[in-house]
Picture 1 (cartoon, protein in one colour):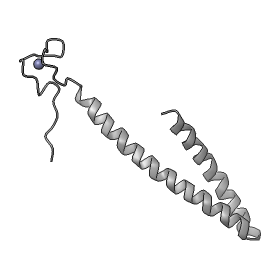
Picture 2: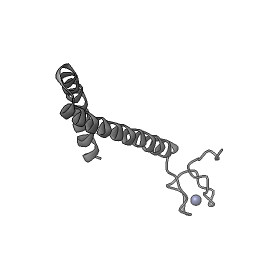
Picture 3: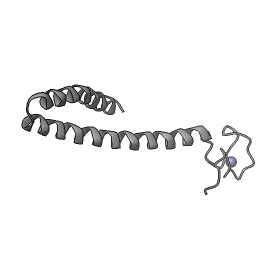
Picture 4: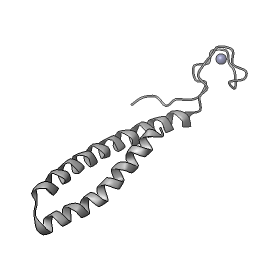
Length: 96
Ligand SMILES: [Zn+2]
């Protein structure tokens, strides 16, 4: 397990804060590093979801062309649920 980060831990000029520090140590608040890690994990999860939605979209489109009757209706209903999610994902992704 890695050591817990503390702002200013590498300061070698005995400063109590970034404003006093003259050795250019890292005073970034630990929350920033924690939130960056969390964001990376959320993005990885969202990427997996995107892949799943793409696969679903592909399979539903394929099934929609080959199925008949009631099954086609069910596929159409599933596409109606999946497609807005895919579009919302693409829109959210472009804002990052
Ligand atoms: Zn320092």
